[in-house]
Image 1: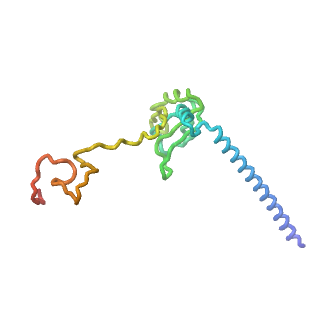
Image 2 (image 1 turned 135 degrees about the vertical axis):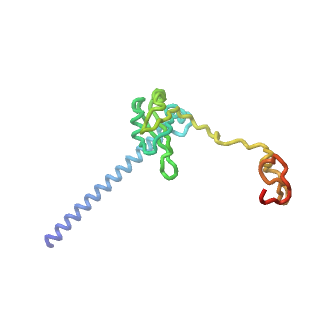
Image 3 (image 1 turned 90 degrees about the vertical axis):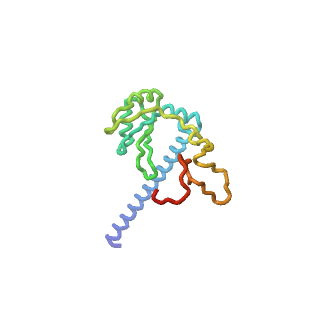
Length: 185
């Protein structure tokens, strides 16, 4: 064998050794991620129970009028004096653009009271609104069915063939319009 082929074989062996090391590291990282995910599911305070959600909401505040260019780190830094910030969530729309408000979760209940004192303070050149986070009540968004409105017609009545009211759809007229056709009236 030539010297050149020996060097190439040594380089190839070195690359195989490095590849094996990287695969071992990747496997170790996957194991660590699985372990952390299992711990988060088991001991996460934001679990699916209603009591846990109420406790998390009691330790959180709503922050309104947040600048669109503001990052979670900047919001966390703004509320750091109130207590230990556990999580900052800036909600985004389906395109990934911020909606203009955020939620800040504290580790202690006392952090919420301190954060309420920062209402109408300035963050990124805007006056923010701080309020305690309310617990979401299921079914609150549902509206009761509307009753009968004589101006909009009754949706369940059937007139048989197509029915055209004499004055058109909408509100009842204030005065009786003539029945003849007058295009420039």
